[in-house]
Length: 170
Image (tube, rainbow, N blue to C red):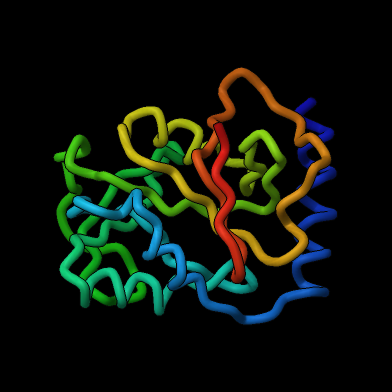
């Protein structure tokens, strides 16, 4: 199955480069799941990933504590309070129960909330440590009814957002 996922990642990355349109995901902040939340884990996008800069800046402006991941040598993630810079700097954030929502990158998401990430397993190891609402950002056409290969360690998400809509999974 891992080789199937590797082939899909290669194909989906190529498709993303061919169809990339810079968009905003600010509309996800209207989701009821952000109500009462004080700490949001997000990520710093790069290349043709769904852009998070304006989203992270709005979260910070609106008073949320924004946490971004720092990848450790073993590919695990630790969270750092975002200071507005383009690199995660500072002490590791250890109050994980205070994180109420997490914004997750993905290459593709299927109708059951299975996500295909970059392949390092970092988020699949990090997400079970968070008791938070999990929403992944994808471009148009990257939310699919085709099943994504799933292994026992793969973590499902609660919702997916394209530039125009939010889909919740049960």
